[in-house]
Amino acid sequence: MEIFVRPGDSFWYYSQVFNLPFQLILDSNRNLNAQTLMPNQPVQIPGYVTSQYTVQRGDTVWSIAQRINMPMDALFLLNPVLNPYVLQVGLRLRLPVRVTWRVVNGEQDYDYRTMVQDIRSLQAIYPFIANKPIGNSVLEKEIPGLTIGNGQKRVHFNASFHANEWITTSVVMTFLNDYLLSLTNNGAIRGLYTLPLYNQTNLNIVPMVNPDGVDLVLNGPPEDETIRNKLIEWNGGSTDFSGWKANINGVDLNDQFPAEWERERERNPKTPGPRDYGGQSPLSEPESIAMADLTVERDFARVLAFHTQGQVIYWGFMGLEPPETEHLVNEFARVSGYEPVQTIESYAGYKDWFIQDWRRPGFTVELGLGTNPLPISQFGEIYEEALGIFLSALYM
Ligand SMILES: [Zn+2]
Image 1 (cartoon, helix red, strand yellow):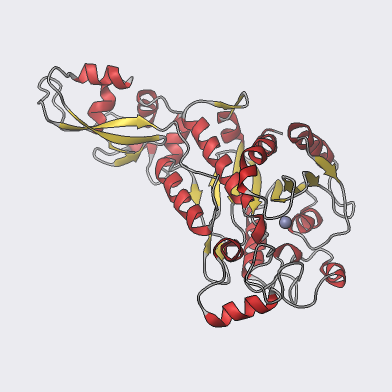
Image 2 (cartoon, rainbow, N blue to C red):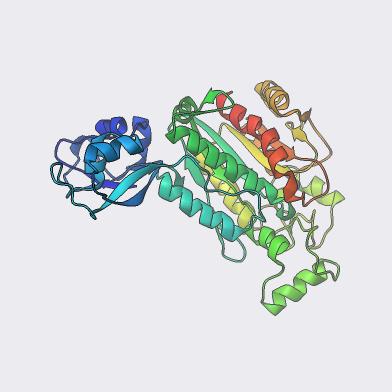
């Protein structure tokens, strides 16, 4: 919601009028200098939208403000021409409406387009989120990278490295929405107030690492006949892509990282296909390159990669994980009921590379139980299991 500065206004005053944390107003207006606000400058107020109201006989500014449970000055801020003494019947006013509902509906086939629309809606209501795309997919889809929080501890979540694990995107996007809702409503999730998390952490989220793959699973192959025929051939002649994990080049993005890549290659297919082909060389694909570049640039304290399925959390790599990892994974296990697993015979994954090169905690979280793609009917249950992990990754 946008308002316009009047002489004497300040961000601190707006935080009182709209009952919002000061920091969220500050972070929603990074282009402005809080010390030198100029009259008529537009200011973004997070967590609100506006509605239209037509003045009725008998209304006063006071009675309208009472009805919507806001200070009268909120009405003056939203309606600069409003005359406090004469309220004309039929006059159309903008009223502030506090957002207390989710805009993300995670319980649906969650393709790239749905995600992009949801990110746009969230950014409009919560301008303190930043979206800096991390790169483009093979088919030139921009891969969003969202950042939220004003703290020092840099935490990273990613989802949908694997195409037919797209439910991880809808789960992560729903968490983001719930986190934002709790922040602007001075609220808590599972009894935990979230504003301290916002002030202590900087959460980076890549909600869909593999957009081409996700759209292949959900919407079928692209129109282009050359690509289409090649994909069907790699898919063993089938037009059913529900078993597809790779990107659109038939490369498994989570077998692409320079952490014992050759060893992983030994056990895996040597040609493109639905899963497990690690490419001609490590980091040959634009999506994995983008993830590697992001990770180098942002210097994360810990990373969590969300996959399906198995209800397990992998937390080690060749004994290189630092000691605090075990402490963290035990908390993740406690709040989710998932089983911690230190190592398996698997290499070249994103979390493997992160542990190897940074010696910091990295996790692969396998959400839910069943056969991929997990049915969307499991969404509610998976979300409840994942929620504790999301929160503890921030508060621990
Ligand atoms: Zn996976």
